[in-house]
Amino acid sequence: NNSMRSGTNDKFYKRGNNLSNPDGKVYLSISHSSFTSNQVLIGTKFDATMGRDAQYDAEQGYEGVMPPVALMTMIGRKGYVIQGIPPIDPDTYREIPLYVHTIYDGLHTFEVNNMEKFSGYTMYIEDRVKGTQTEINPGTGHSVRMMKGDYPNRFYLVIEHGKSSNTTIKNIADEIHQSGLSVTPIGGGVVTYQQGEKLVIDALASESEISTVDIFDVVGRRVYSSTGLGQKLLEIEKNGWTEGIYVISLGLTDGTNISEKVALVQ
Image 1 (cartoon, rainbow, N blue to C red):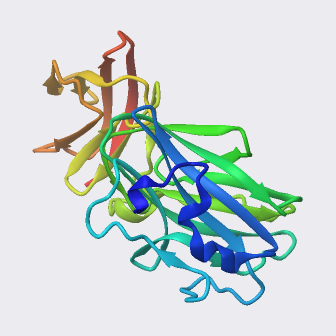
Image 2: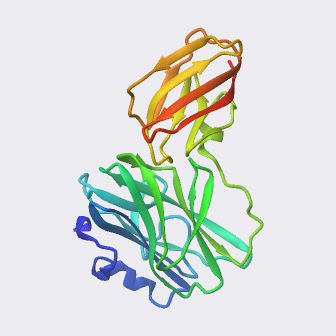
């Protein structure tokens, strides 16, 4: 029963025995204060690939009913709780896609529960919504504020052997925002971006929620106003707005008021 997996119980990794004497092994988990943790095992083997390896990889067995918080690695469109990967050459890295499911709002914590034979390696959680890489080690966690839902392409485990030349963090915004407008930080963990005919204000990385929004055009005319929101994500139709500079003024639920100039394109 995969829903019973905890952050320290290896009994559910029977196929993990095939990963005996690996070049490296890491147990990665995610937890929420309302649910202990959910864990995956990743190990290197000389004959493993980044595709599906029947002798090493184990698919998740949730059968459509996931636990409250679930973590999987992704190979194609399928989720795995055990994944074998090939060795990582010195001064290179590998990216392993992660899938997160949660029924909770609030802070979720990634943690390395155990790491074996990975001396000289550095591991990161890459967040392609925030555009960040955060180093994680055994005993240290990385907390991310998320809303309940499924996150199939936001998080990656990056394993770096030595020091690679990788300095670019891929941002989902570069792929999905057809306008080409970059993500603009407003402050307090809030960002904004344009998605088609909508302006998106995203506070998923903020400690607070969006309470009020006022948007003004370049001559100071208010083109949008809303109050009493209490939302983490707001999509606003740009009805009749022309291309140009706008000022977004936000009030957050913690009492903070922030504003920023944003360029909108057609």
